[in-house]
Length: 117
Image (tube, rainbow, N blue to C red; front, side):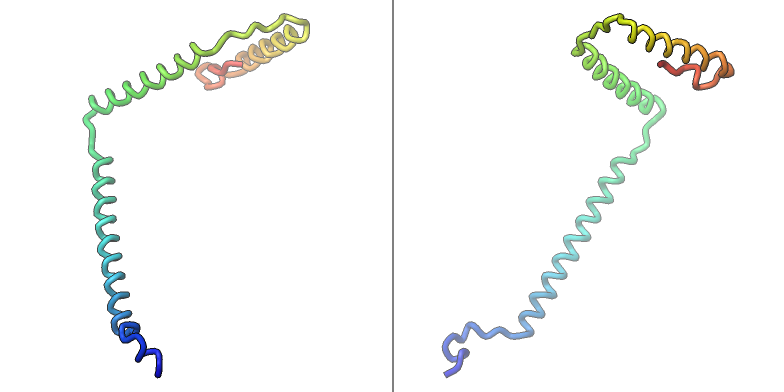
């Protein structure tokens, strides 16, 4: 007695395995195509052209949101007082002199003029 005689359902045909494999591959390819279509639709949604006024309005709204968030952060901060010791005054004086030297050597309109130390 061999194994096939004991359980007739246990025999697996090589053709069945191949067919199942091909079917799975076909299903995967269909899913992949569907996913690509969805990605293409999503990318097209993001590239809608805005009129100049809409673009400007969107930019202004974003700026307001950023400034509001920054204001909120500043309002949460508590000011720290710096003790005016000799070391602190010397450091502040050096920074002020350095800033004045940089500004005196940079031409008008140079971006360095707007630096804050």
